[in-house]
Image (cartoon, rainbow, N blue to C red; front, side, top):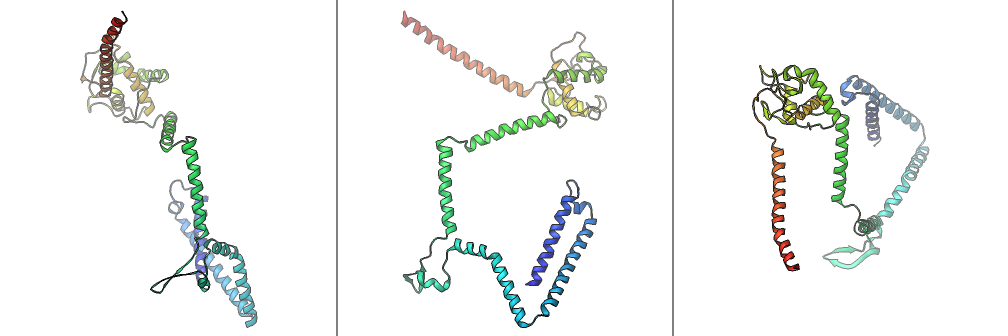
Amino acid sequence: MKTTASFLRVIGFAILAFFLLELTIDSGEQWAIVKYPIIWAVLGMLILFAIALEIVAATLQRILFGGLNPEAKERFLAAEKARKEKRFGWFKKKYEEMLDSKPMAKEQEIVLDHNYDGIRELNNTLPPWWVYMFYATIIFAVVYLVRYEIFDGTNQTQEYEIEVAQAKVQVAEFKKNNKDLIDAETVEQLTDPTDIAAGKTIFTDNCVVCHKDGGAGGIGPNLTDDYWILGGGIKNIFHTISEGGRAGKGMISWKTDLKPSEIAQVASYVMSLHGTNPADGKAPEGEIWKDENAAIDTIEEKAIDSTKVENKMIDEPVAEDLQMESK
């Protein structure tokens, strides 16, 4: 038993030393014990030190205890037993109170008259811990009923909606503070005048050589019409600027020269040029590109407008009938 206790103390000491080293050594996302192999040597030395302490303590105890006479040994053991019982006596007492069970020697006091083929039944009371938990569930149920049914507390659906709204605000704030964490799939068209002005500056410094001022088109295609070689829309334009155009004859990739936020700005500026129709605009190249999402929105708007017209046509005869009746 003493050997087991010593073994457990050594293991506990090793685990404590491990966590202390992990907390005190800055190793980034990697475990310190993996990043710095020398820690294994340090841990080994600490474990050997702990084992040496256990051996020394056990040796000293054996020497001191071996020098006692039998009566002194018995008194020492009795004192140790009393000390341990006193240390854990309160917990043991509370544990027995929470169980409230009769010892086997006193089971005759609670034996019922029932007898099933020699099997006796005891009239044990419910353990106090079980009763207390039952009372706690009743109190919880009453509080829950009053909170959510009488005073209209926030239910799970409302909590979900609140958390989603908070998450959207946090995501928007995160995007605002980390504008370069975007790509062709997550980019959105910028409409803020500051972003458009910044995009125009980038376009003027880097793009007018091929596309001319205002996107009329020169070596590169016209950026103001409905025709696109690699597709229009903010996502396609962002991708083309970032990755470059057609291999061998398209424009170069700008992702090494411009940040993602800058590419988003210049792409949004290019979209703002649509329909400006400059006088010296280059002939269309590519194919007509239509935004499918915009088409869906247009269909929905037309459906809403047609519904309004139908309702108006239905309401007009009714209004005329009412006028005739009033006459």
